[in-house]
Length: 275
Ligand SMILES: Cc1ncc(COP(=O)(O)O)c(C=O)c1O
Image 1 (cartoon, rainbow, N blue to C red):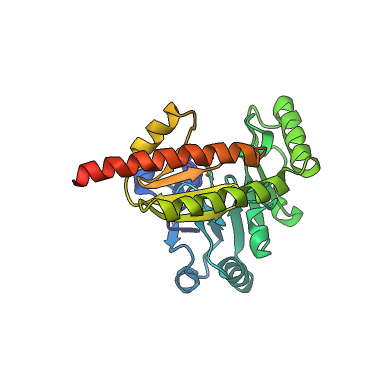
Image 2 (cartoon, helix red, strand yellow):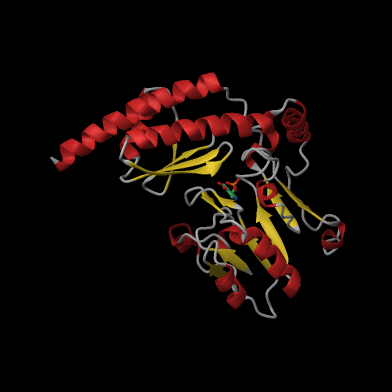
């Protein structure tokens, strides 16, 4: 099994085994064996790691937890090609990036690449617990009915919420909204980067955006709460934005105004620390 450096796939035994960060793995060792990690975006290293026993490559097309790392141009296509050549399954974990989040229904659509298996959860039922693994019938045939089930699997309430969410995504134009408003947000953040030298980089797609700062973001997160904006972090120095797909440009404008204020305050704080 091959996963990527920086990967995050969850904290249950199997998913933790293909999650990179030692901080999460440590307490649960030993995990599933025979997992190798390969640098994200580096096709040559991946090629070297594959041998005749390799079953699959699992990856996030855009890594979420480790800081909104977007696959470099050509990487996904190269991984797909390599997996086809070597007869290996390709699994995309689109739990964070899928279902419209990046301005396309699937993050892998940005690179016109299709996996053999796709993992979905998070937004799939608009906040009601649900997850799904989709694959082709020939792969699914490896399992027989009832072999993979759970108490709340197929829960009718969750399924109703899932249907409503998918309808909203496809019929109410939420995917297009994520693309349009996400771009508006990124453009605004780029302008803030020009103004505030404490910002190192703005990156992402659609409504999956990371702002890498030159310093820890802890104080910005706390100040954000006071201003009515709940922010998320990645690592110590990255702000992660995954706003609801229904957000409007008017609402984002307000968020940008608040962020401007937060960055100004942080810059002042930094000056005082250094001075
Ligand atoms: C890409 C990705 N995969 C898997 C997971 C795990 O999902 P859950 O927390 O629902 O187990 C997450 C959660 O953050 C995620 O971002």
